[in-house]
Length: 275
Image 1 (spheres, rainbow, N blue to C red):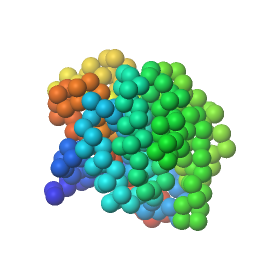
Image 2: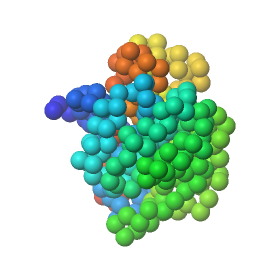
Image 3: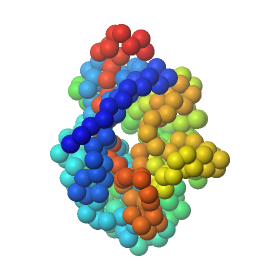
Image 4: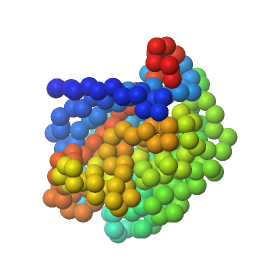
């Protein structure tokens, strides 16, 4: 497996990215190392995995979803983030949310996407719960990791007007990470707060024709479509998603489905960085 590595300093947060080739299940595992201000030293090296935009049913091969779950269990992250769009346009594939995503061994936390709200937010939440995972809707929850509290913040979908950043961040302190579906929500986070947020929604641009895709995305109000961004002094990472909504693989070009594995690093481990 050939890896290419790049290092960036974004708003006081450093990230190192390694890309692996598309695997037998049709997705790429992307490894991202992030230096996060405020991360407790006990959480240095913590692994967080992200999956997004499943669009279960005819839009995404079952084998890909099951393969992603199997890969997660091989990676053994400290926790898993599922950042929305479990379904697409109808309730019919709702049972597949539970059956295909069940079996993730690490603690798993979800947020909803715009399609989940379009179809049935309550129903999707119940399906995720049936799979054994919690869904945060403008809430935060504390995981006890390595003997120290780690707060996971879940901001509901901003594209459908359900996000409430202020409520989501109430009482948050120490090690924390923000989950949301729409990348634009990152603009609503407190500026220069050293926050690390992850999102999905864009499918990585879905059809990549450089520089047309990026230009059109910005024109239509979505400048954050894949990878790392500095948004108001906070770091945002946009996952390309596991499925592609409309006709899946028939409706994308050069945007490979993605499972992301983040390694969180405490600033104390890199005294020369100056974050």
